[in-house]
Amino acid sequence: MHSIADIINFFIHAIETFNASLLIAVIYTWKILPSNFKWMAIYCLLIVPFLIVNYTVGYYFEVNNRFLFHIELHIDFLLFTMFFYKTLTNEMVKQRILYGVLIFFVCTAIDYLFFESFWLETPDKLFLIFNTWVISLSLSLFYQIYTEGKIKQLFKAPLFWIATALFFQNISSIIINATANLWSYNTDIALFVYLIESLIWFIYVLMLLNFFRLLYKQRNILNEI
Image (cartoon, rainbow, N blue to C red; front, top):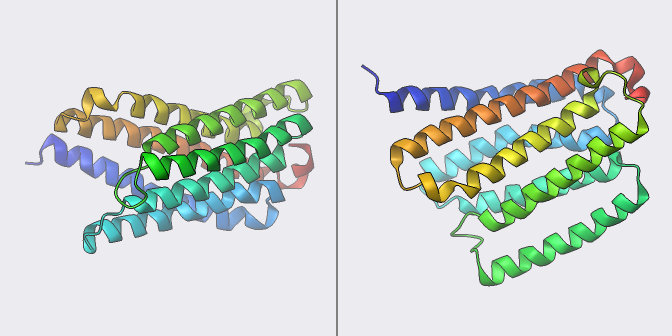
């Protein structure tokens, strides 16, 4: 008889395995992707290898793998920033992105010098800054979609889905991390929250897959999205 914890862990691992579908989506659509969307495609390509490396280092080599989260954070920051910089059209917003990059790296230097160890701790403070950064840029993209008025059917627009996916995932991460002190001390509650977090990730991946699906479906009219 399997315990509830075993069942939850099974579902969590099943969701993690589902990430492989992103590899298929990227490989299938790479040739028709506009240059700005390829930054998101690279991000999706790296998700599965990162999980494998992270698990291998932590489980088989029994090495503190927290430094991998720092590496992932900075790679994601670069890829998302490049995507938004290439996609957003307002020159003032693009200028603010450049200032934001500078501020982020100043915050990174301060964090490593005085707060969080690159090797021993997860970058919780930097993740908060990163999540806030992506949320603000997602809102800018929503505003651009609204003001330009080029998209008539939002749910059929790849750009809408990628903005929604990034906003959804990062706002969820902030909420979960902000409430960590309320549940992290209890193993059962922590496992349940981890399940919720995995379900949120599953929905996020579904949104990303829909983004690639719509891109492929509309490959002959990409200049209109």
